[in-house]
Image (cartoon, rainbow, N blue to C red; front, top):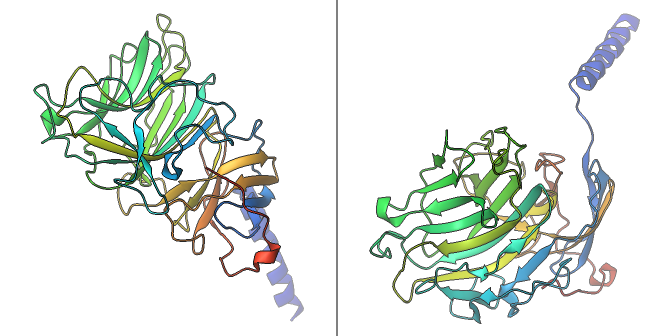
Length: 357
């Protein structure tokens, strides 16, 4: 029996050393207070890093009859918002949306004057719906929909584009600084008549190197490989991008009644974020089943504690959903989601609701 115990102890010790050698850590979420829409929720754990300031640059909640930026934004947007609040088409969990007719105007939708940021990193999240088919709605020159665009105004840029004249297929293009590989055609088209959640995760390249990151993720599916890198800066175009735009019909005209609807927009000058998802395990994929991800609003952020203003968005509830903390490199601190506490909690233990809109 002694030899068996000794062998078992030796085996356990060896396994522990092997695990340590592989760099397995316990970083991630340890506990979450009761999750309910509109309430402060505290996330405890480790390895979150620090984020200061914690709040996003801008958050717009057009789904709650508001065109101005949320009070949880660090900055208040002073430019023009293109579109108007409407009840014509709304996402689940919302009461209104921002309705925009793309006809007769080549300026950007939503924050028309662009969203400025002063950082080599940026993350944008948007829930929107195209109420048109890009092929049949094309004008004489196609459609030329630049759904997302980064500028060093107005010197050089990078954009995601859908062109109706060639079947609506999308591509990402870096103008001026990456002529050796100007485009990635990703073979996807806009989804008409359906709400989609799109994420844009950016990190600037260094001057003269093809090491910049732009990830475009639609309903949890990446439009191109996560390993793709871009040359965004050269000695001739050394400035990083510092302004972003959504949905511009570029150099073209489309018919009246070509509507787009926007439920919400979140923009930050950091890649760090908190996501509520229906994925028990975080995926980085370019095909397969869609995922539903709702952005959360961070209010404070330390390495071991994050407080958020909870948003269930178009989820029916927080029950059966999972929280993820994403780090400064755009990666989850843990790929295993933390199941949020269900809704069957004592209301007396919850904090008073706050306006997350």
